[in-house]
Amino acid sequence: MELKAQDIARLQRWQRNFPILPRPFAIVAQEEGLTEEDLIAWTQALLDAGILSRLGAVVRPNTAGASTLAAMKVPKERLDDVAAIVSGQPEVTHNYARDHVYNLWFVVTAADRAAVQATLNRIAAATGLGILDLPMEAAYHIDLGFSAPDEKGLARSPCRPVRPVRAPARAVVSDFDRLLLAAIEDGIPLVPRPYRAVAQQLNSTEERVISRLCALLEGGVITRFGYVVHHRKLGFRANAMVVWDIPDSRVDAAGALIAADPCVTLCYRRPRRLPDWRYNLFCMIHGRERAQVLERVKALAERLAARLALPDVPHAVLFSRKRYKQCGARFSAGLKMGAA
Image (cartoon, rainbow, N blue to C red; front, side, top):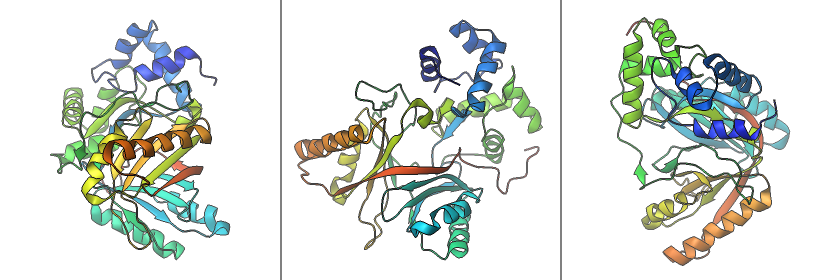
């Protein structure tokens, strides 16, 4: 499926604020000059083409469960085999090969920290390799909504942070909320009344499903609700995780400065793991070409020097080489679906 300008514009408009109302497709269709049936068919075509990951919730890490970013040093000749073991774990949501001695990076999301650790232990036992465990300590910007490339071929995150946000205190998330998030982890059903369909799956009511989704969105557990795109399908194939070694006393200021850059789509603090891992500030930049991303990294380094008196900050640029797995957070493992 070839995306036209109007398709990209529509995706950008509805990456957030997709209606959480009884007939959401009818509302969006009216604004887009389509029929409800045509909008549902268009959404299904995007899913079938791999352009969309899902239509639904993006959940803030460590609110409805626990998560971590992990990395492994994998011998080159074993990389695909080890990646298959990692991707085979249902708790693993993202799994990428990157340009670095730590060449396999993955995200584990589970019900609690014990379940995350159990997944890491299984991977270590199955591969015989050590794992770098890097849970998030503070979030400065987490959005991953994508605009069309700017004039320099870089992605721009449409929603910018207002202030740094510490890893939130554990939100009030009920057992029903976890069942609800599990029910829509692959997206809402593409039917005229999707929330009623979800409610029927949970032996609940449409009103309760809508009320809880709105409450989770208002409380920051859900960071946005809408179309979740695969960025590579929008042409962003030069994607880099940039890691910085910032003095601990200055990391919040540096995180806020980097997060405010419109070309940064993620920015967060994670622990050092000395002596192997010195970096404590992470950000993501997505672009069409490597040179464009590297130019932006250079600009960020110059900004740290000029505004925060942090010259020559040690950093590394880890470009993605291969995507093994990418999906939304999994909440269904260990949950019994039913009335709650």
